[in-house]
Length: 209
Image (tube, rainbow, N blue to C red; front, side, top):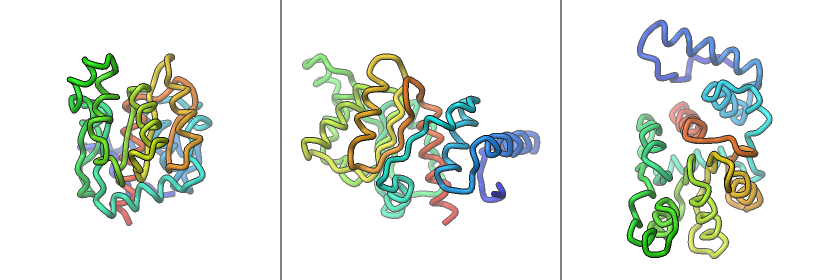
């Protein structure tokens, strides 16, 4: 696949050349002749880890297509923390980008739960028909899964890539088993760079359609 339609975010000729070469190397590792391959290639570049090729999961409910449809409908994008929000591009779509953290701090303190979990609970029905992106908080992903199981919310796409050794693997495994379109990564890996590059890849596909 050519890279002429991809925006690498470079602002100089040198930066563009580096980005192009990085894409060529990673795409040879992954294969970028499908939407899933393009997203996984981005994740390999974002992490510098070729093993990521084997770890990114796309469930059987067409998550990339679901994300594209959501962007066409200008669905809001809700993320777990501010670092993820800062990374999500505002170019090429009209979706609002907002964070869960900070939305339910009183509930977090009262109930002894994380601020991200409390924020998603506080958002409640606003999460219907949205894109949810979690790159940091396993507890938030567990909460989102609980809310879906209880019929409280019905998002269009969940990108669940929390990182860490406590809860991250189990929260992503739970999301993998749900019917909602989702993209995850196996094990303890993940984090803001992967979550951001995944949603930005879908946004760029939307922009190029």
